[in-house]
Every structure is written in structure tokens, then in C-alpha cells.
Length: 284
Image (cartoon, rainbow, N blue to C red):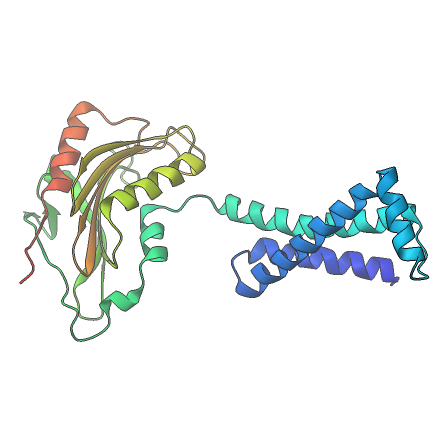
């Protein structure tokens, strides 16, 4: 293998690594250095097109007995600029391709599990009523509770529920759901309802430009909004109502989702009623 092919293969491998691991500390550091070198090389390449600059560079180098062939310098600087800036471009594309985070992703990325560590940390609690539907307990407020089934339930190390999901299946296909209700108990470490809403709305605009996010309720401890995907490829056609309760150590999420471009007024009323049922208990 020639040196040229070896360098080309190494550069291609570097591009793949940057694309696959754009957030890795070492990758970010290397890309930053490469981008700075590439930017400097691009400036040097541009200067070779300016006659007065070529003369001054030549005088500077000749005074130090260094040869200056501007076409060679231009070509080499262009190669370095393309290589360095390509790494930066690939990194930005990889980050953008990942898209905006979902509400759960935003919270998990922002909030550390350290919020749950330490004996002094007291978990928040919520008050919530359920309807008994045979073997399943269905949250209050959901329309036609007999048509809903519990899909999954997760618990933390203490046995406390951390995630629960219920679905309402389609009448035509028992394996296809038309409505979904979800609950998540997440760690809270200082994010405010307004900050969370602004982050979610900005992320939705990037990932689903055809979608909309409408604020329903906002206070110091509560957030409720409706998010429509607009049929964007990432989510498909869904319309959901999300409500968050912000405690001192816990962040509770309730979400009602309809698999449609837009839920009906009756579904919207039912969804708001269902996600509004849980209440944050005052901390002792």
C-alpha cells in the first residue's frame, strides 16, 4: 500500500470514528484541534491568491533562506483545510442527525442519578387513584377503562414503580394500539418547568419542523403541554399531552398519546383529565 492510500484510509477511519462517537472527549478534543489547524490552513490558502500577500510571504521566507513556491503551498494548505474542516463538519452532522431529545432524554441527560444518592435524599410522592379492571389497575380519568390494558411496569431497587405504560388497542387489530398512557418517575436536580419547556420546544422544532408544541399550564411545580408531530418521519403521526410534576428529588411525567395527526376534542379533554389526576404530595 502506498503512503497516499494509507493516509486516505486513515482519514476515512477518522471520519467514521468522529461520526460514530461525536461526543467522546478525545474525539471532541482532536476535532477542535483539527478545525483550528484547518481554519489556519484555509486562511493561508486564501492568502496565496493575493499577489501582495505572496510577495510579503516570499520576502519573509527568503530572508531566512527558505524557499517559497506559492502553488505548492496553496495546494498543501487546501488539503489540510479540507481535512481539518471535514472532521468538524462530520461531527456536527452526527450530532444533528441524532436529532432533538425526547422529554425523557432531556431529563436523563441533564439530571444525574446523584440526586437519589445519600441518606438525606427523601423521594417525593404523588397521590393517584386507579380503577380496577380485572387483573389490571387503570389510572383514573382514562375513557372506557375496561378497554385499557397494562403493557409494562418497571421498578427501582426499592420496588417503587419508576415507569408504567397502558395502551388501548385498536378494535380492528388487537396488536395495534391507538392510545397510550405512560408514567415515569425521574430524578430531579434543579431544572425548572420553564427551562424544560423551552428545551423541549426547541428540540421539537429541530427534529420535527412540521410539528407544534402548545403550552397548556405552567407553574413553579407543574408543566403541561400538547405536542403534535405533524407526521414527521421520526415520530410518525402522533399527538400527545404531557404533564410534569417537579418535586425536590423526583420529576414525575404523565403522557397521553393518540396515534393520529390530531386527537379529537373528546380525546383531548380525556387526556388532560387523565394526566391531571396525579397530585404531588407536600413534602414533610
